[in-house]
Image 1: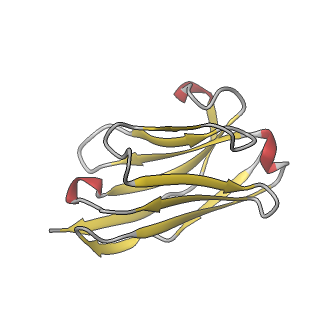
Image 2: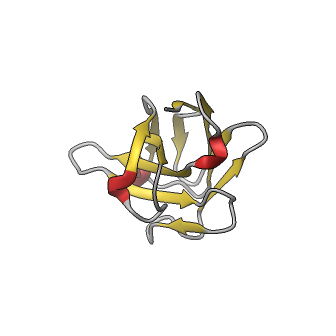
Image 3: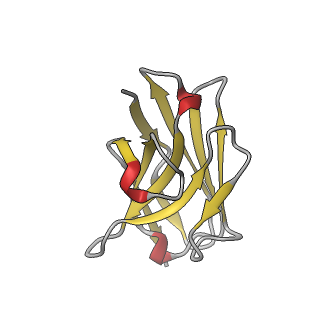
Length: 122
């Protein structure tokens, strides 16, 4: 298994930026597809962005395309989410997750971090 720990969340004004990090340990990081999910208050968890094992392909939710960038550093076992032009609706607990399957299949994300709170004020 792999252990995941998110960091970088906080309070930011609308239009601002944050960089989330996810540190992975326990197994070879590059053996997992990785993704960021978020859980807004009162809403269901949703996929935000994903990246394939070698970083060659990325996927984004329509709501964050052009604003968020997912990346990974397999040498350092880190996953990142660069968030720009933040909006109040981006407010959520953000989780990094590891998949033993496809980056596109939400059901195959078997390992999750504890989450980090991102709050975007108007």
